[in-house]
Structures are given as C-alpha cells and as structure tokens.
Image (cartoon, rainbow, N blue to C red; front, side, top):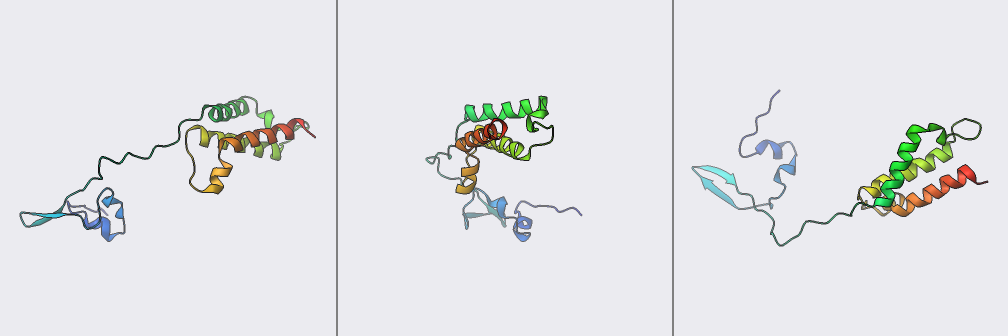
Length: 137
C-alpha cells in the first residue's frame, strides 16, 4: 500500500504523526494561493542560541576505549584466577566502560538516576570497584 502525501500534509495529522509540524507554531499564519490553503512556516527567532551540549570528556573516553580494546585483545581480563568468568568483575568493568563512553562522547542524561550511573565519577568508581574485585580481598 502506498500513501501519497500532498503539499498540505493532511495524512501526517490524520495518523497521529505530529512531528511534521516541527518548527512551526500551532495555529500559524495561513495564506490563500489560488483557492488552496498553504501553511507558512514560522521559524524561531534568531536571537535564541541552540542549547549547547556537553563537551567531549577525554579522560572518561580514554578509560572506556582502553577497557574496550584491552578486553577485546585479552578476554581473560574478565576471568577469575581459576579461569572461570568473574561476573562481578565483568559487571564493574562493563559499567566503567559504559559510563566512560556515555560521558566521554559528551552526553549528559537528563534524569538524575541515569546521570548518577553514567557520569565521569561513576566511571572512576566502577573502575576502582573492578580493581578491588580483581586485586583486593
């Protein structure tokens, strides 16, 4: 089945897909051209700057990439002394890697719970936990 969208975009609103109106104010100005109603787009004011994202966090990204590369080259890193998988160590290292990648590329989650688990400091805490599980008591 093929759906054809005409210039008015009536099918978008009919199906509940309202993202076709992004950048346009609701109830925006309408003009009439040869008996056909055309919606004119109203752009936001140029005075508003786009929101700035967080910058790349080099230490977290370096830790995450190091864990990823070393774990790929030497998978016994995730094993215990007896050669079996150490799930606590693997979980801590994967948490450090995930938090490092999320924070390293500059993404800061909005929810405080995810911000707590995927911050640069949680990357360090998870790395310290992994070190304690590997070499500690």
